[in-house]
Image 1 (cartoon, rainbow, N blue to C red):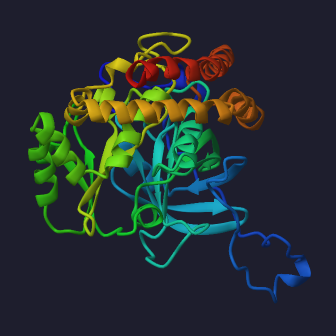
Image 2: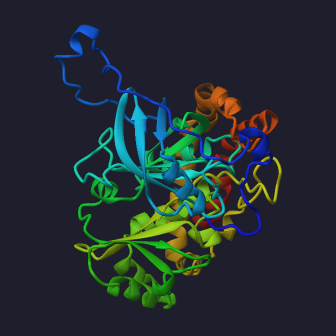
Image 3: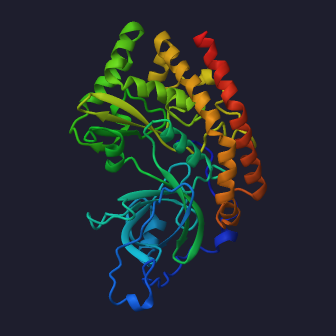
Length: 412
């Protein structure tokens, strides 16, 4: 996410963690595999752990062990991979990690977001079927629920989006508290959502980076070997009127594009392409020559912007303001696009109401509430957590009606 002048840093980190010297690793010797007995240990070969790291109804206990050298390297920079040992249910995996994030960046001695690369050193290694996963501190979100809720809605409603879950992390024997586990947009993700996963994947690498500027787009996957398709999309984005609509229907997966715009409005994902020109990726499916927008950084949804409003979300609630990106602005100026998008918003109002988001918030509170309150590295207080949970429930009670009222002005 791209935010200026507001750092997500714990308020009293020194009192929580003491000095910044790297803690020494502890011995976590391999334990018996689940179901084994002591008499089986010499004869039964462990097959590895089982489970779903993205199970939204569980909190997984993970450990990371770093050597003093690796810890110091993360202290020095943090963006280069260092070796680490990942532990889960008595099993150990040699992996690579580094710190991730921009405005949510925190040093290794605080509560950093991390990339965990499972097969960095061994291309054949997997962990619970995964090659890589993210551990997000979601430090802007007092509830720690936004990502789970938002990614869940996107996926349930048929839009390509990451899986997510929760983990309790211990690093070098120290409690790092609750993390949100998020699926990266890697090859496995593309294979799950696209018939042709062998295309280019881009991410906006700068604030206010739009599709018309290839130089500010960071290549995540470059299977096609060139940027010709992105340049063509950027040229088409500059058109207007009937030419714009014809070009966009040719370049974009139009149905998904309309859904993308409607989803951002519906759940108030303002830290996004259409509202803030940030936090988006673009995937080009070469066999169809179609583009799909992918969402990310869902921790500031439901109208919450803590550096503007302290309590309940009021930011980005106006559905008429989602026109920042050039393609979003083009839709605003096109009657057919706006009519289809309003119809999608109306449909999402029904789905949002049927999903009973307020009940989901209560379920998540029962799952993670105790872990949030016990997190020694959290940014927010108990009172702030309680207020935000209540705000989320209020949002889900009111939003369907707001969506219907807005969409009705285009559909009547």
